[in-house]
Image 1 (cartoon, rainbow, N blue to C red):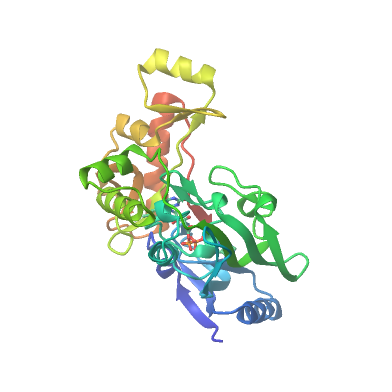
Image 2: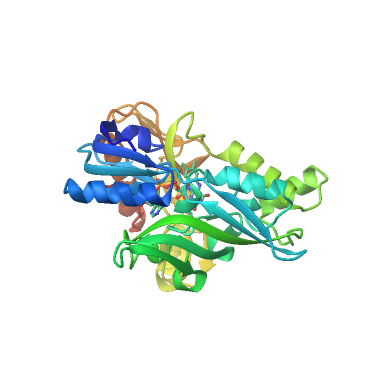
Amino acid sequence: MQFVPDVSLAEHSTMRLGGTAAFACDITSRQDLLEALMWARDHTLPYRVIGSGSNIVWADEGFKGLLIVNAINRFELFNEDERNTYLTVGAGENWDSVVERSVAAGLSGIEAMSLIPGTAGATPIQNVGAYGQDISQVVATIEAYDTTVKDFVTIPNFDCAFGYRTSKFNTTDRGRFIITALTLHLVRTSPLPPFYPAVEHYLTDMHKTASPATIRDAVVSIRTSKLPDPAKIGNNGSFFSNPIVSAADFVQLEAEHGPMRHWEVDEGVKLSGAWLIEQVGYKNLHDQATGMATWYNQPLVLVNEKAKSTADLLAFKQAIVNAVAAKFGVQLEQEPELLP
Ligand SMILES: Cc1cc2nc3c(=O)[nH]c(=O)nc-3n(C[C@H](O)[C@H](O)[C@H](O)COP(=O)(O)OP(=O)(O)OC[C@H]3O[C@@H](n4cnc5c(N)ncnc54)[C@H](O)[C@@H]3O)c2cc1C
């Protein structure tokens, strides 16, 4: 295994910004992982395990440690019976390729999560989801290295504390587990309605019935038209989560500002972050000072047009946060993690 010095972190974030890592290595097996952890310990360096960097922003100061890039591949199907199939995937597998292959095998369960950038191993961290499906609905077990007990463990779904964009891996046990594989429970049946309106419209317009393949086609088509491709322009997908306010605060906000785009949720009222940003004049805004912009048809997505540093990104982000706070008194929270 190679431990490469002075690696550009911009190459390990889809936002394409950040300093350098003191060292980086790729791991392709559990044995590689153990070797990398031992190397970091022997060199008294901190380490960080990442996938494709699609939910990471690196600081300009860089990371004075070992970057461990998960490239553990595996794709094994086990048909339990005519309906139920278990799919075990390596944590370093490209997620969309996992979706594509499961759909090609006629399996349902993850087709609506098509085209989400990143690796399979990162999906449980923030309980990745889209168009009505999330990973918590299909994870049977997770194989991980537990850095506390210093051994590989199998974590069942009920022990992951999955919630909306959360799990124990990004809350109570942040950094403790290094995921090496996932086993997903998929089914050999057609997905059942109701589907998201945009998916429903696609099926109607294309005169197609719902199957894992047609739902995948619908989601790929919708996402391609709505979101920037990180291979072409630097971005981390939604840079802010939709803020949730109490029902009482919502009544107050509407009394002051008129009707606001929102959804009722268990925790209160979820406001549309995109709408809030649009209201403060930041939709499709191209900022010459920082080289950053908001994506023309999804203002929650910040894109790096020609930013020179993470400081530029953070200045642009802060201007949006401040504008929304000043007008609505609502705090926008950043979704991608700022590291180290
Ligand atoms: C254009 C675009 C669209 C997106 N759309 C969505 C969407 O619809 N829904 C959604 O939920 N997300 C979305 N995202 C966010 C992102 O795709 C997911 O968070 C994805 O799971 C990140 O995968 P990654 O491999 O790039 O993880 P990274 O960004 O490399 O890492 C993310 C976090 O997970 C940790 N991590 C990574 N791998 C492991 C591992 N094996 N073990 C332990 N910890 C690990 C890292 O340390 C870091 O804390 C989008 C991003 C982009 C750029």
